[in-house]
Image (cartoon, rainbow, N blue to C red; front, side, top):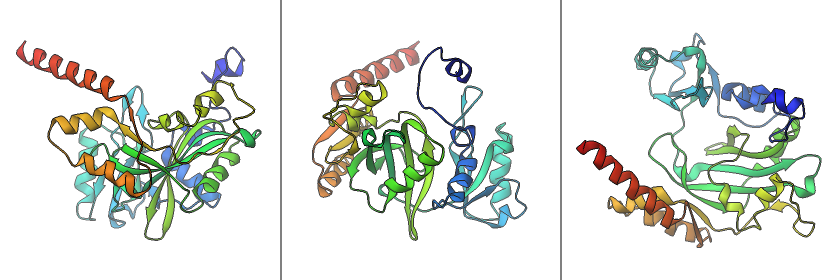
Length: 289
């Protein structure tokens, strides 16, 4: 893709993306720290003192490698347990060079925030950005958002994100995750692409897609997006209801407490129900065969 873009055979985003922040979470953490953005403490897996810096998370540097999705990581709560956790990683055939250690934080889903949108340092008036707060995760532990709500910037997260993006002259869609800790917000990860909750921009004149396709409307300049309701993963929501897990309704009530009562389901509830029914039917059929 880099070769084709360099030869101007087609146009795509993101532009100006250093390998260091695209495919190495540990390198990104070191980069963010070097420009003054607070980060979650992390260190190499081969650090001789690793076993004594617990609790920690043995975390993958890459999301994908050679077409395979790597596990998000393994928590380690004590130095005594560290060798066994590391042996488990090795026994499953994973390469230690693809992992690093990160401080393990005890957090709640609502501690995860993300700054997202479309960034172009050359056209700052056309930039669009939103801050999302997670209200529920897909599953317990390390997971992605199932319910997210657009909220006001709680602590200058947009400026920290722009510092990162401007430093690498980034142009394109992005999501930068932050985590709220006892000593302030810290940057967690950088996704230089469209992300799962990008549907929050549909209500805002679909500015994200317009910006990506170069369909800017002079009367619709960029800026910070607010009051766009709550994003809900439709498949996650219905699957929990079908299983009698009515706690998901509490997540929607939480959105009302932060002033975002309108819910947008992606996929829609109709599409989500169709997917779940087909999946359930095909699973029963496969089991019968």
